[in-house]
Length: 333
Ligand code: UDP
Picture 1 (tube, rainbow, N blue to C red):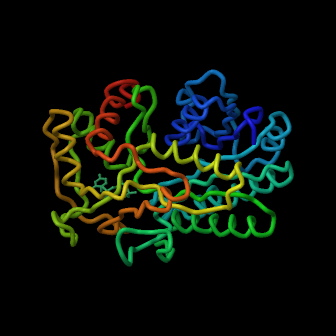
Picture 2 (cartoon, rainbow, N blue to C red; picture 1 turned 180 degrees about the vertical axis):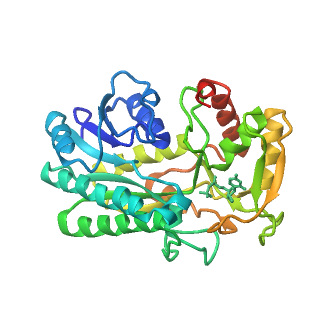
């Protein structure tokens, strides 16, 4: 892996992918993005040096063209579907896009002699927590097709690593959040289901209210606790992971989280402070499949990558997300 080679970022026009692309470019790396723009946004790729290819990761002809035309040294894969609820009602869509399609990508990589792969995995592979915080040895028993599809690909990667010498990192994200410091790119899902953008839309007045999904959980204030990890920190971990593998490190799996949990209620109060707005709140029913608490044990990422979250403060995360909502994203909703 040299700077002469490009990194292929599949799903580079999406939320976490686009932030990683910017950091790669800033570090002097050549980047090719492959994205089918189903959920991604062409305008999220702000650097002109990036080669953009519109296409699907399961399309072998497109992949052959990309691997032939560009000197690809490694692949980062961000192009999964990630709506947990939808994965329950439409599992075929999830197993097709999150499992079958990446198998085509992995085959193309083998055929073209590319053997470094960074995979966006998730804490949803752990399922219902048996203890807290979650370390990487926690049993993986996902409770929905989304988590299952991610775990299945982790298993595929382990087998390919063993049999074919693939070198991979499976990075298990906790709650991706925040937006770029300069406010140029950020979170723009359609439909939006994530807590922080919804809370901030309620603060901005573009959403009537925020519904808290349950206040009867066994947590100090009764609402669910999550580990919110800034997208800038996630992106940084990908770059460190690729360097490690290129320098000869063995394949690995690790959590990416801060190790700090915040409840839904706490987050809403902090958002009121950051925005200076009163946020209309309604207490609703629990959402199916929500564990009371999900917090990472982040030690392994520190040990392997020398990585730890820089944004440990929810205030900063909310500030960057608020700047984005009031900036470029404004026209989108
Ligand atoms: N949540 C909520 N109201 C909403 C959206 C989310 O109370 O409108 C809660 C949800 O139950 C969870 C937390 O906020 O406890 C984070 O949810 P999100 O969908 O952002 O991420 P997840 O943890 O499901 O990956």
